[in-house]
Length: 326
Image (cartoon, rainbow, N blue to C red; front, top):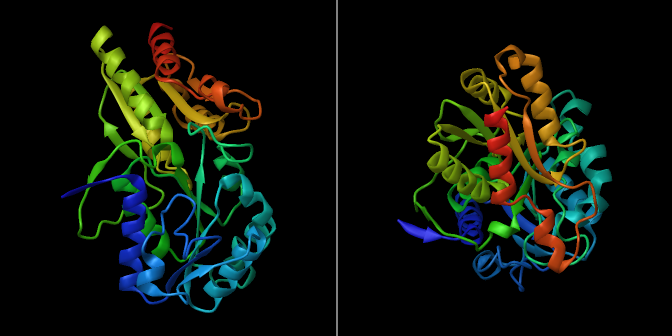
């Protein structure tokens, strides 16, 4: 089984889905001859040609609007935003059209399209290139929001997203693009959207994370388990919306303690929604307040200060210890 980076695994998903289904195509700025800003679409233009790997002008609203029209006409477009910070220029198309067509037409038309976008910090990028704004898309009914954490689940989730009958926002943690490799099978794998994964079973504390936060989460959990001899359950959310609250609530009812880790700012985020769901459905099982480790409510800093802003394994470990000691 080949070991791949997340970039290679996503490329494999695109390649195999385009081979399997002639209605699947890719569009976006520089996705063709230049193979994408992070080379995620490498080799696709040479294999499938300009009719299925389409270079577009630098116009995010136009890219998404075109993809919506393609989807309504029977195609399965995969649109690429160069960075998630630019996707807001397409928000009118996403919120006003893509998310609404199923409801607007009483189910006669759906919009089977994927909008891929790299997101998050950790690569010393410029302004508008490092935000983690998954909550913005998750607040729009009609959009699914998916965030893989590693190469293998990125490939399996993107396959599921391409085959989904409704629009999917596929956010790729670019800090993890080439940070590590995993074994990715050549044969097809598909993960169900809307399902979190318990990646480590435990009995005394639940930790919920997603995307680029999973490596520091697992590092912090290893340190706490070794130093304290405790048992920690780790949940990788994988899909932000719809939220798999059932898996989280079941875990918290078992452990009685929970810490949520997100790269996004603290206020009005996914972690806040998770805390609310736990309060709704598992409040009487809690033995401590639900802890949160987030970045701060500020614009993402530049360069040298960037790593001070992102949740580190050390910050996560201290939150786990505080929750255990409560």
